[in-house]
Each structure stands twice: as structure tokens, then as C-alpha cells.
Amino acid sequence: SGNPAATAPIRLAQESGSQRGFIVFCPLYRKSVSFPEERRAALTGFATAVFRIGDLVELSLRSMNGHGVALTIRDEGTGETIYHQEAARLSGHPPWHSTLEVAGRRWSLLFEPTTAFPSPHGGLLPWIVPAAGLIITGLLTSYLRSSARQAARLQRSHAALSREVAVRQRAETAADSASRAKSEFLASMSHEIRTPLHAILGYSQILARDETLPPFHRDAVATILGSGRHLLRLIDEILDLSKIDAGRMEIAAGDFDLAALLRDLAGMVQPSCEEKNLGLLCEAPARPAVLHGDEGKLRQVLLNLLANAVKFTQHGRILLSASPVGGGGDSWEFQVVDTGIGIPDEVQAKIFDPFQQGPGSRRHGGTGLGLAIARRQVELMGGHLTVESTPGAGARFAFTLPLPSAAG
Image 1 (tube, rainbow, N blue to C red):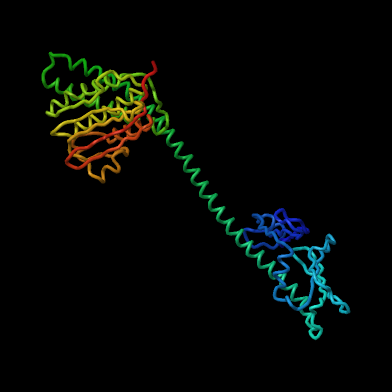
Image 2 (cartoon, rainbow, N blue to C red):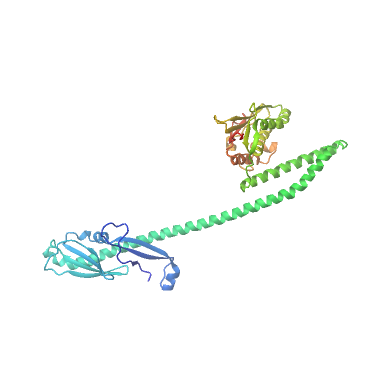
């Protein structure tokens, strides 16, 4: 019918006394409808309201207290007395009967004068009866309308939220598909480009060792070799970043000597430091320190930081150090410190983002991927790479990693 419908009188779960209650269901529609078929098609749900009969009646008759009238209500569908007002009835005065429609149910109202009923006002009783019915109906209608409006608002909010969630899920699915497509493309590109590139580098290295070539040809071969190596590094960096983004880069933990690793790294950058007259200080453990962790990724991170330090330092020195944290020896702090051009504050905030380059990067070359890869590799190993820098006074890159001593 499209109208509110009430249940028969029930005992509410939250009601500990003898008071009865009922539940009203009010249908909600997407639009205004007139015919049953339209209502069924447009139905979106129901607003429900729970009433305590005693509370509802007493609230309705509050303004009539003191007039000496007691009310008894019986549900005609079940024959059950659902409300009875305790009071001493006045004999000699006939009761007044009335009926009230409440959300599809029919209530019988019996009004009886009590000993507090003033006989001179006997004419009030016929007015109290319809007034009580109107007040009860009005309160019930007002509450139902308020509940329906609130339910409609909640339903609209839920529908809007559902649409937003669906849009985000579609966007996430599309992003995942794009990420998979990117990873597949990069893997294919790696194979397709690496194979001929290795051939170019191989033949270039052979030609570079040929001392019979004229100087012009030797310079051309050196250019080919340098460009090929640069392209190979770029491909490797892009692939590393892609693997990290796709969650496909894994830890390859093993036992390694930290002191030997640091000395090896210092030896790799020593020639570049000597070319620029830079000092290189390596603070490594005096004795072998055999630890358990991913030596390959640690080597790549430190070499990246050292290469940047050499690149952006014109005078002074570079420090590479590793020291145990605390007394347990299961965590180590690594740092690379230079006396180079430094990094402005506004650049530090985004220096670890992909394709972000610091001051002078274009002049010195670079892809803007090295630090992004380094930070993500450090995070993959359980640490966090940070930077401290003052423009014109150098920079300090540091991180701490959990590296327990090797067993045995």
C-alpha cells in the first residue's frame, strides 16, 4: 500500500518491565509513485521506528494530566490490553469509547473518569477523547516522518559512498593493470635492448684494445663504449625501480664480511677521488665483521651514495663509515658524508622521488633514479635512508640496518 505498517504488540528486548511496544516500518521509494507495480519497482528500503506504548501514550496525554481521566488501550487485532492507566475509577459516570488507527492497526481506547474528575467539567470528557487520539496520531506521524527523512539521508549518503568506492575500485583495478603492463613491457624491453647492447659493448671493448686503430677511431670507440655503458645503467635502474614498485624485488640474504665490503667500495671510488684531488676516508671495522644480510643491495646503495658524493664534491673529502648501534651489535649505522655543494631544503623534501635531481645534476649527468632506488632498497632491508645538508657545506646520507652476526 505504500503506507507505514506496525507490528502487533511485542515485548521489546531492551524492555525489562511489563511495558509493551511495537515496531513501525515505513517504505522508502526513489521517486513519487502511485500504483503498486511502480512502488515495487521504486522500493529502496524501509525506515523503522521502535515505540514503547506507555511512553508514547503518556507523552501524548501529558497536557491532560489533572483532568481526572484514565485511559485503557486494547489492540483489536490480538485482543490484548496494551496500556492501562492505574487510577481509582469514578462510579456513576459512563466511560467513553473511541478507536484509533495506528500504522495499519486498530486500537480501542477506553476513557474512564477517576475520582479526580471534577463533575462540573463533565463536558470536557467528549473533547478529551478525540484530542488524545489526535495527539497520539500526531506524535506518531511526526516521528515516522523524521525517521523516514533520516533514513533517506542515510540511504543517499550510503549510495554516494558506494559509488565513490566503486569508482576507486575501478581506478585501482586500472592502475594495477597498468602497473602489470608496465612491468611486462619493461621486462620485454630489458631482453630486447640488453641483447644487442651487450653485443655492442662487447665489440667496442675488443676495438678499444686494438692499439693499431688511428686516434680518431679510438676516440669514437671510447664514445660508443661510454654511451653503451650509460644506457645499460639507465636500463638497470628503470628495471630495479619497476621491480620495487611491483613488489618483485626480494632480499637475498647471506653471510658477508662488512670490513671487506667497505674496503672494496673505497677502492672502487678511489681513482675518481684522486682525479679530483679529493680525500677519501673509510672507517671500517678493524677486524673482520661477518654479518648476515643482503650484501648485493647494501653494496649497490653505498656505491650509489659514494658516486653521488664524488660527482657533487669539488674540494675537500668524502667519508664512508659503518658503526654498530647499541651494545648488541645486531644493527649498524652507515653514512656517506661529503663536503660538496649541498642540497637546498626545498630539494631535500623530494630528493628521493623518482626522476628528481638535485642542483647541478644536469651538468653532472644522471637519471634522477639513483636515490629513489637507494631509499626503497634500504626500506626493503628494514631501514630508512635520510639526508642532512646545508647548501655549500656538503651533505650527509645515513641509514641503519638490522644486520645480525652470522651464525657460527
